[in-house]
Image (cartoon, rainbow, N blue to C red; front, side, top):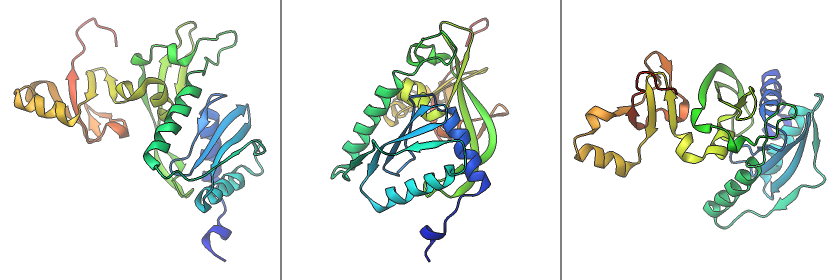
Length: 242
């Protein structure tokens, strides 16, 4: 009996998966990285399989998702799933998948009753990155691991609700320009491209307006996707709101 046949989810696997699905707004997409799967949260505790790639790894990952949610309050609907042939151009497939996810994200609304403000229209530039600490998670092979759990928060335009979403969903809503921008009490850090770094160094501005980010900055944890980047640092002026 091989590893695929003997795999069973741990309690941490189940806990993380339910927590992650609960953080996705209804209508939101879950596409585990590199799995060839695409799910949509279609109800309070309902997950619908939308796409599955015709590949053994996709089938095995879906089987593990089914095992993980078996015995919980979550139901998985498979009847309307589309079988997708593996693309001969992986880069183009990734791009098309991103466009699909962005189109779905553009329809997400505030969860407050009687508030229909779309998340994409909210002040995403005022978002704050929240470190939720170490939590159980699943890697790309559906194995239980410990990793930092981060959230992104921003206010609704039409009510007092504070929206909290997964970083990947924030990236779908705000695009790379906002995703690679970190607002702190000490200033705004924006990731520079290689060409921009060269320009900054050649013009002797790098030492005064640029900052290399590690895992911590001013006793504050740096969001994982910003670590190891070289950023333009714009200080927040006295009296200026974030």
